[in-house]
Every structure is written in C-alpha cells, then in structure tokens.
Length: 585
Image (tube, rainbow, N blue to C red; front, side, top):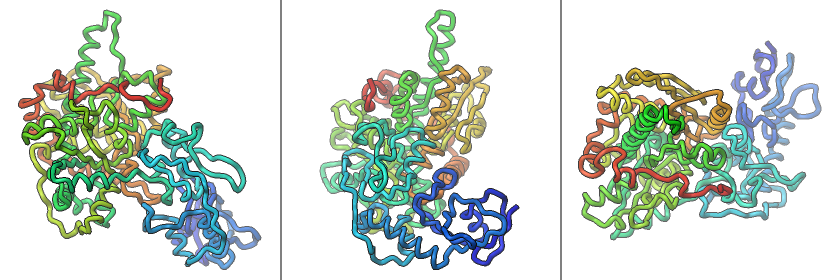
C-alpha cells in the first residue's frame, strides 16, 4: 500500500493507483476531458494536471501513479492556471456556437470551461478548414468541434475493432479523421455509433431526421404509424431525469399520441414475429442437416442472428465468407414496416402509400437499414420511412414543449401493440437467443419450458457460450456483444477452434441498451442497468413466449399462413447480398 496526501487529506491506496483514482478515493474531484477509464488514459487534454510537492513540472493525474509520501495539490494556483490555459487553447480551436450544438448542456468541455470560470477566449480563433461531411450519411462528423481527445479512435480500434478513425498529420496540424479513405461514407463504418456516445463534445452526432417526421405529422393525407423498440423504454426518461419505473412505455405512448401520431405500436410485436421466423428457420436448418448428413451436402453452422444491422454491416465488410450463414429473417424494425404496409394497410382499408412508418431505435445503423434497396414494399416504397434515435425522440418531446411527468399512461393501439416478455428482452445481449430458444423448445416438444430455462445466456460478458438440451439434442450456442468480441469469435471459427449451432451477435457492448443512439452520460456505461429493466419487465409479464402472443397468432391465421410460408418469405425475409458495403465485391 502507498500513503499519499491529497489536498491535506491522508489516503492509503494500492501501488500503481493513479493520482486520479487516489483523489477519487479521498473524495477529491479532478476535472478530466479526454479520460476514459481503461480505454483512454493518455493525458492528451492536460486538463487533469496537478501539482506535486518537490517537482517543478505538473503531473497529469489520469496516467501517473502515486508514490509513497507524495503530497499532491489538485487545485493550487499553478495547477488551476495551467488547467485554465489548456482549456482556453482547446476552445480557440473549437466551434463554440453551443446554442445550436446537439450536445449543448451535455458537453464535458462546456462544463469544464464553466467550472473554470472561463467567459472569454484570450487566443485567436483557429478553426479547422477541413469539411468533408456528408449530411445525408447517418453518422455526421463536425470537424470544427473535434478536440483531438482520441476517444473515438480508442473505442473504434480497441472495443469495436473497426479501425475507422485515425490520427492524421503532425504537430500543430494533427487532427482526427477517417483513415484509409477520403470520405466517411466510403469507409467500412458499421454505424454502431459508439464513437458518438464516447465523444465528450459534439464532434460526432447522428443525422437528425425530425424534420421529416414533423412534415409527415402535419400532412393530413398521411397516416403516421410509430413503433418503439424494446431498449427505448429503458432509457427515454433519462433525458428528463426520470427513473425507468416512471418513464414507462405506456407513458411514452401517451406522449406520442399527444404529439399527433395516428397509431402508436410496440416493436416487441415484431420482435415476437422475428422469433417465429428465425426460430423456425434455425430448426429447418437443423432438420436439413440431419436429412443430408450422409449425402455430402452439408448445412453450414452456426447460423447467426441478423436483427442487428451494425453486425450485418460488420460481417459483410470484414467476413464475407459468413454472410450466407446469417439468418435471412429481417430485423424487428423491418418486419414491422413490412406488416404495417401490407397486413395493417388491409385492416385499415387504405393504400399502403398513405402509411408513413417511423421507428424509434437505439441505433444509427437502423437509419441505414431502412434505406437499403431490399427493404421496400411491393410498390417500391420503404417499409420504414424514417428511423430516429432515442436522443431524437427526447428532442421531439422537448420541441413539442411537453413535460413527461405530467402525462398519464396510455395503452398502445391494436393489434400491433401487443408484445411478449420474450420480445421485450431483445434489447439486451443474450435476449434474442433466449427468446428464440423459448419458442424453439415449444416448436420441437409442443410444450413450453420454464420461462427462465435459458437465462444462462444473460449477462454483460463479451463472449458467452452454453450447451442446452433441446428435446434430447444438444444445442451449442454462443452470444457475443461488441464487435471486438465478434471478431474474436469469427477468427476462432475460421481456425476451427470453436464450433456452434446458433450464435447471437449484437454490435454494441451490452446490446441495444448500450446502443449508439441512446442518451449520453459521459464516462458512464449504462447498458447493464438498462438491461436489468428489461429483465424485470419480462419477469412481471403474463405473456412471456413469442408464440403465445395473440396478435402474432392472428397475423399468421389471417394473413401470413405460417412461419416460412411463401408470403412470410416474401415479406419477412431478405437477401443480404442485395446491397453492398463500400469496397464489397
């Protein structure tokens, strides 16, 4: 153990503890900007500098360990003035038009500057003149807001292993930009959005599509249908300081109806529909494998889930040899759109072109997915017209000057407003696998398992594997979250070191609850807490199996026929080769 004194407070900490960690233990706050624990501890911003007695130079607290007997002053005149100058220099190269920034009042640089009592910038403004931003691409980079903290590089390289961002140039011309290609939209970016949620400022953001939503709402000839993804109900209230127990899905339904949406539905419905198709697809694959075992025409395993468009983009861009093993089932977002503009249009007795489908998703990749040429209805129109993130939803509610705390709960519309607990847990890593196994067990045995039979696939571990008994057949499954873990698994599969029957992949750490379109809490990972909300909701629901959803039964009985029917294949399945990633042959 090491004994140090921080601002007059004696504290004992283990060896190799950083000054920042020791100060936190002593109850002393040191401001940071570029720091992300275990990921970006490089002292690039120099905001965390402190004074140590006996040394002329200042120490960066985030990456310097304490030594026995150290006497540290975190807010001495010398440290405070250096910190202030460093922030002023950063501000001189930063667009400080905060009022129109997407991160206004949720910006770490803004908070640090305010805390340091900075009211003007004594240095000449020197904003970057580079701008190659395509404002039609789902991910937008604001070059004049980048503070070169390197966080986006670290999250992209070390967590997601996609290598999109890089350091370019040297000296005073050093900047962060897309690496390997000239434009971001020409890169292999999977649109997971993790660079956005880990950026301390507004240098990265999603494309804002609220104007399109508002135009649809104001058009009397358009029927607006909005679907809300499972993970949204865990986090939409965070933007208003509301706990998830109060900020329920049904309270959100009330808000959306007040805003003027004609029909408010639950993506849990189409998550259940996805399970019906995907579980049936998997069992059909297992059946074919058994039938062709001795013919040489082997089925390739594992089958991969395909409901995460960020994962599908990653697979196509980096591991094209596995694309044919992706489930052909569309994501819940797209299945909902397909059903809305076919089955539901018939129920309403309206032309599908009159229906405008909006989805609220935790993800930027959903914006790209709904624009793929394969995701259109029989008239050639998009199945989902526009997808907005959770952050855009919060901005929409504020735009309408609504206070969520004043709204009661309301019921969603029928019949697409009914979802099961199985559909609900789609938003957490392991949730798709667990939901699929619940129904697959029933399809094979004719009986329901205990709802929590397959709960071993839960948890935040990056790579989980289990073997389950499916009516006497051992089924080896894996669940991975975060694309760095997906890369590890795929590499091991290629080397023949592991084998599985069924694999769930979610691009974002923790799954959709940790998605790149979720509310931002700088330096805090919220996925685990949000996942607990989904599992609590599942446990409290009477309906916990996708195949028991009465609305799912109705859509098959009245319209689709059965899972994997010709109509189901036409509406609910897709060709992953029908669109291309940049550089894909």
